[in-house]
Image 1 (cartoon, rainbow, N blue to C red):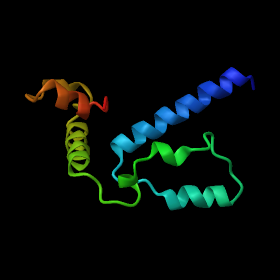
Image 2 (cartoon, rainbow, N blue to C red):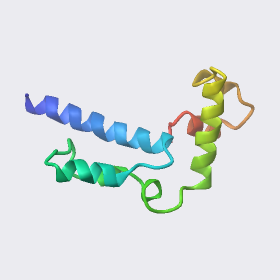
Image 3 (tube, one colour):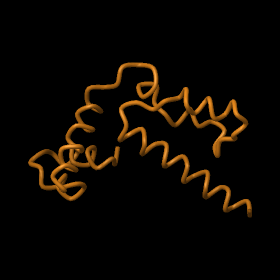
Length: 101
């Protein structure tokens, strides 16, 4: 593998961790650590830096839980992601629901 391909894969992995932390209320660090103890190597060495503590040890933020609930309801009604922008809420909240922040 060429070095620039590895960098691309690492950047994609970072993006994936950030997006996962935006759609999941809990990420099991214990499962990841178990895989590491079995000799697996992470794509990015500082993977834990990309997962907010509120996804694995602290209580999850109410704002995040609301986002998950609204997105789940939109998904149930086949309105995700386009339905986000038909909600009568401020654009900033629409962007939050669309995982842009």
